[in-house]
Image 1 (tube, each protein chain N blue to C red):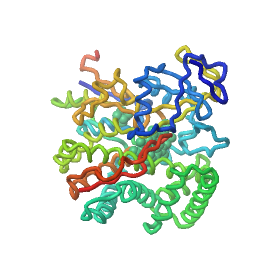
Image 2 (image 1 turned 90 degrees about the vertical axis):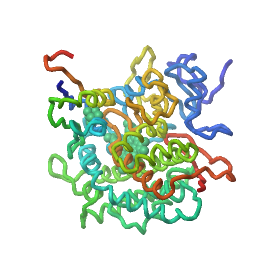
Image 3 (image 1 turned 135 degrees about the vertical axis):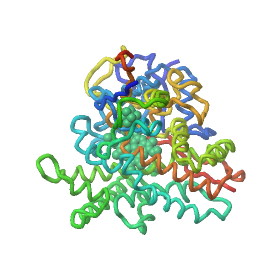
Image 4 (image 1 turned 180 degrees about the vertical axis):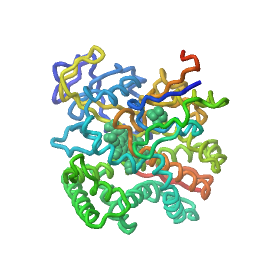
Amino acid sequence: MKVHVNLDVCQGHAKCEDLCPEVFATDAVEGKCVIKDPEVPAGLEEKVRLAVRNCPEGALRVSNAKGSK
Amino acid sequence: MTLHFQPPPPDHVPPELIVDFDFFKIPEGVTDPAEIWHGLIRRGVPKIFYTPHNGGHWVFTDYDDIVEGYRNYEIFSTYQTPVPPIEPFPVMQPQGVDPPEHNVFRRLMAPMFTPVAVRGMVEELEERAKGLIDQFADKGGCDFISDFAAKYPTGTFLFLFGLSEDRLPEFLELAKVFFRSTDPEERAKNVTDIYAVLEILFREKEKNPGNDIASAIVTARDAEGKQHPWQDILNCGFLLFVAGLDTVTNTLAYIWRYLATTPEARQHFRERLDDPDAFLRAIEELFRINSVSNLFRRITHDVEYKGIQFKQNDRVILPNTLANRDPDVFENPNAIDLDRTVNTHVTFGVGPHRCVGSHLAKREVMVSMQEWLRRIPDFQLDPNEPPSGVFGGSVMGFESLKLVW
Ligand code: HEM
Ligand code: SF4
């Protein structure tokens, strides 16, 4: 599973970082989402999905390895 | 029934969308000011309605429209929005400016309020919370507003601006008049006083810059290498004063009122005192339920939205408390569920003006709760006191909150 952020839409709520700091951080300049590694480590899929559903801007999206939703 | 208003609603407003609603007026006996908004939903008012009170304005009531009001700045502007109208009104930087110009001051402030920056302030926030709580922890009771909730964010403001702690009484007084006075003369003088204080402060920081936000604002340079216009600098300082004090005070008050009356909630948080990540996740629900701000927007041009005709300069209010309890978005919206897993509340707004201070505000609330619960694990509303006075408006809250333990 891969996770992507649309930085034009991200407004730096940092919900992603709060919910899954293993995968998400925020930058020190604008406070926007930084994905440490788009390939979601095994075992963290559920946490990442939860972060995606909690983003108030709908800026996050996951896709599986084959590229479909 | 025919309603008679002075002045009557404008012609473009269809009579079936007119509701008699004054968001400043809290009826006798109502102990939670947010209830006036939730009462509208129970009355079954139209999703988008118009009230002739306070100069006349629209109200959005569901999540999707409130979010659209925040995001779609081409229709819903933040420029000169006060309800009731005050013109001219200081152009708050960056809140009162639409994108793309908005970005100038937004970018300037953002680095000082990122989660990374706020993590660097935790120790200072903890020390100040401890210092305040220790003044009354062994007294068996306090007025939560005047003894803690007003002082704490005001102290944070002094810290951010590199001002000495001795100035707390002066700033508390300025804030008290600004947020609570209804006397027009006193209010006008108060705004002049705040600007005078900011003028001196920024002039000092210009000469002797320190490691604080006032220095960062006054020494910042624009794209051409020039200082930002002086009036914008003052307005930015003014916005920080307006945005970061009363919001935090009343959010704290709402939360303490809930904790005082809900032993299970006190226990829930006490059990998480040593797990800051879990603590932070659980307070999201408190921010959803205790959403104190009602934001304003102004219509930029005559436009139809959702089949309704809006005219240029019409005002719209976005009540966060209604968005946050929209049953189409939140399961069981009126229940406080500290284990809620999906929570896209809009207490800090969304879109370009999303509260730049939200991470600081969350930390202030979290640190206050942690330090308090460590010292005062159980407390109640004082049974010998009548219910606190409450107020509505753009920030809703309480005049006092007497606690005992
Ligand atoms: C619980 C406390 C707080 C609440 C509920 C709150 C709420 C909000 C909301 C809803 C907005 C969006 C305004 C709009 O869209 O028109 C906002 C903006 C803002 N807030 Fe907060 N706020 C809080 C605390 C703070 C603090 C502590 C600070 C700073 C020290 C702060 C600084 C700002 C600033 C500068 C903006 C304007 C951002 C922009 O226009 O880009 N707020 N706040
Ligand atoms: S939660 Fe969404 S908006 Fe917030 S930082 Fe993460 S991606 Fe950006």
